[in-house]
Amino acid sequence: MIIHCTKKLADKLKKHHPISATVLSAPGSDTSLGEWHANFITVARRTMLLFIHNSTRFSFIVPEVKAADYKRLDELFHKGLLNTMQAMGYREELICAAAGRHDPIQLDSKTDRSILGSLNQIGQGLEYTVWYDGYEAVIEDFWHHSARLCDRPTSTKGMKQGEALFPAKAMQTYLGFEPEKTVKDVMIDTVLARVEKDFARLEQGMLSAEELEQHITNSPNVIPFKRP
Image (tube, rainbow, N blue to C red; front, side, top):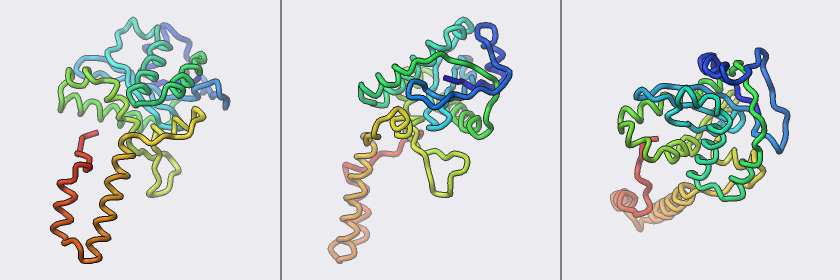
């Protein structure tokens, strides 16, 4: 497994790990977790590690990292990955498949600009959430907060307008599993089916526009808006 580190992270890790001066690449294999990018940010005077998978954009954050923890990078990475998957509701065999790909980590300091941009957005979003909700509120439910990073659409270099990648599902495919619908998927499907039925009633004159609006607003299946 390859982790492409930012220069500032590589400077912290080089005391404990060899950092390749040339770009490394992971061969396609069903025993490896492939290639990742990593960086760190300081929020509320706490250091956090950020990881993002190159091909699926699956990402997670490891909180409250101390200077002595950098020598345990392998442990921190895999613990953060599996905790995030568990918080996302991945089924047991899928989490076990990820755990089974515990291949040795190799590091370099060669980063891709596009992927680094996605990583920086995650850091900025976390800083905003901590500023808005407070650090303690975030840390109490940290792995679920980390999981929400993967449950939203993202785009990658070369994608056409309107296309999107869903990291939560992309990682399931990467690990060799058919993507399952999340609870959010089921709720959205329910809402859309109900709205479609109501629009049909509207066209048939069986429902007024005002009644439709009220019906949608008061529907128990409407998903409340939450900040990402």
